[in-house]
Image (cartoon, rainbow, N blue to C red; front, side, top):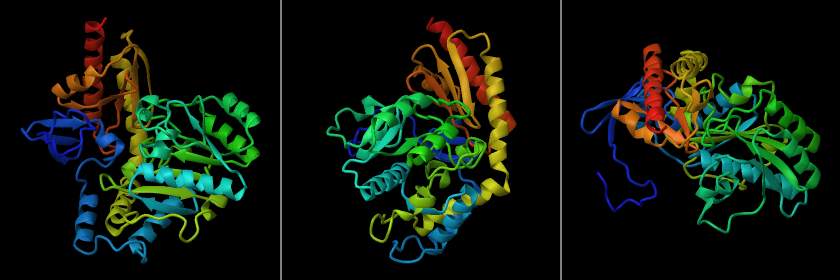
Length: 394
């Protein structure tokens, strides 16, 4: 179904999904699909998880919204839980990942203004994706998504991802930098996993320069990489971390977490959100965190991720079109030596939902709740399709 009443910014959409359960969704014709995309890393608990469904139903029948003029018990509890699990001090809740990143950018700007800098600058990375608001769009390292939206805000400097020397060079050339904003693993940029000591090196630089280390964990957070947050794979604590996507399992919610001096930068009246952290969103977030912990789904993501990587590498071992198969937990990418967008429709015809990012990287983001058999089916189907695609496009 298409209607001119909708803006056409999403282009042509040919699939209409009407129902979901677990790892599967159904279209309006009754066909079932194995969802290896999870709403782009949103439905980490799968579709219609009983715990989230029950929490949302109960809250919808009690109190949906009151605004942040009043105390919200579920908001306070979610803040305490996520702060405890993350090692951070406090939380600002928003409606989305882009808004969480906007909050992080505002924290850095506020710090720079307090230091007397006319234009405080934030180091960002080539290939990054931080959102589509004007500030986060500027921080994003993709000229294609920036095109047509000039003038973009100033205050950002860009360096290559996973290049510590480039950051050190930039530090020597600029005395107005106040923060680094970086994804622990680049998602939209092609599931790019940096060197194991990358975050440690960034932490060292930030400490030496008195910068904020701000991590965008919109896609990597909430258990997807085999830790609640990807930075927990290393002995590093950021000053600011943002998350969204999987925190509400489909209910819109974002969070900007801070610690130390960053946690004290927002004071009364300096930032806010009408809907951010409302009772419904926070009840969903509480249900998600409790389920991740109680059902040991974070550890399960690590196990399933290893299984998926092994199975994909076995299925594609002799495929010369594959440059690399990489990932962390259930954030997996298969890089080909050519554009491969056609694989999305080919997979759909086989009853599997995937997507392609950066033009030539098959991105897999299945639910943390999927079974071993579902994991094997994803690997087998993708392996067969990529092999066939490579032969036909040779």
